[in-house]
Length: 301
Image (cartoon, rainbow, N blue to C red; front, side):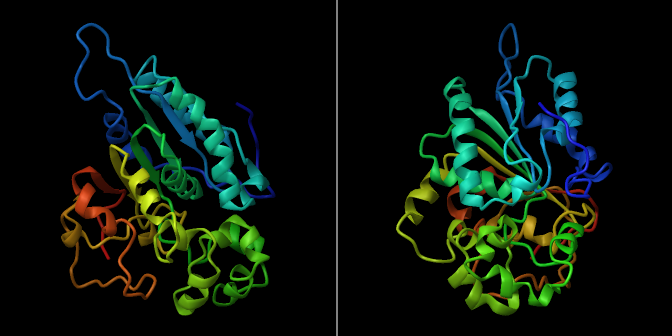
């Protein structure tokens, strides 16, 4: 596991010190075996995938926490596409991570847990869609832009200092722009047609554009035992924050950690009549989908 300081003048998209750390006890509960072993508890291996401009070093505290609370757990923080390499096209990253996780899964016939942060959550979701042989028991998505990114963050301002958010589609929705990972999930609600035509990644894994692998990908993804989406308005990673957990909660019947939602607030994220990818799964997987927030102000789209 190699360390890194700042990447490209940025400090990386580190896990927020307050919000998500409060959720770690619940996260660790998900890693417990379904039933205790008679003599010795055996934990399933944990695989961690980092986010944009991150590296395995960014997750040293999570690694320490798991080792302290669940001694003996085999935790692998994958050291691929670190720093600037995380800007590589996401399908290229999916293939790289697929080659890395396959032998880990092969050695764990009882299954593995997958924890993926920020951009890594999209990589993992695509990975689970294309791998018909995966044995992931829990897929935990930490602050990942599952419905796309549309907002100003520090790394976007650094990468495109002269491009305003409203004009970034001109870059991202071009063949050249799709060579950058962040453009693979840039979702400008004001240019939805361009997004659908140009997106080589997000529109496909969301099922927003027809393709011959759609049925197989859905079947593969549904092999996951549990899907856990974690995010909130104060995590400082993705804008708009609802992209991490966009769902019509009442229709989907999923579990969430708070019930004090304000029905008067209407999320205008990604002005579209299409249902979210997760809502399309609800008929078969509603009991396996969980949503957690890191603040008491939670609003479901």
